[in-house]
Image (cartoon, rainbow, N blue to C red):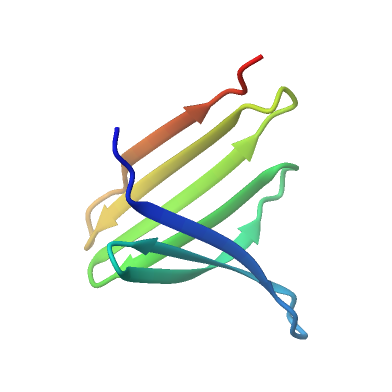
Amino acid sequence: MHCTGLCLFYFCFDQLSVYRIRAYNEGRYLESELKLADTAKAIMWGFRLGDITTSSVLRIDEEGRWTEYTEITVASQPAIKFMEVNVSPQR
């Protein structure tokens, strides 16, 4: 696998206490609000570009396993699974 992207999470120190995410790829970037999920150790974000909308959830469990799940919606079509990434620490 060859990855060319970079993603940064940062916190805006304003009255709303908003978290932001900026993802870079091949000289371009997208920016979105990052939300803490209702459950512990999970965050959610998404992007919209024209008729395309993504929705992602990243969870980290008690053993340090990281799962990122992304759905994509095009126009009025139902959401479909775009990707799922599972990462486990090596011991």
